[in-house]
Length: 65
Image 1 (spheres, rainbow, N blue to C red):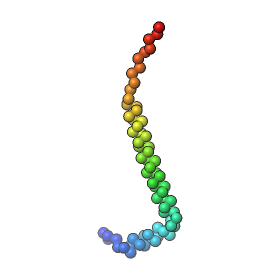
Image 2 (cartoon, one colour):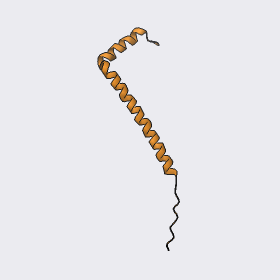
Image 3 (tube, rainbow, N blue to C red):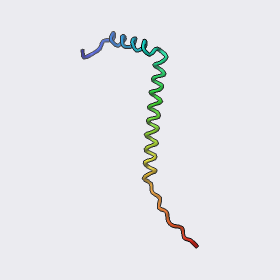
């Protein structure tokens, strides 16, 4: 039971195509790609927020005349 034959994978592919249809699989993969892109964007936004948060600005009081 360690390895699966080619017939096993063909049967699995047919069952997946029956459940999802031909048009649904590319949609699903597109949604997965959008999710990965938004995750990466969120991670980079978090890193830039962390780097800007660690920078400190020293404010000197203005002299009044």
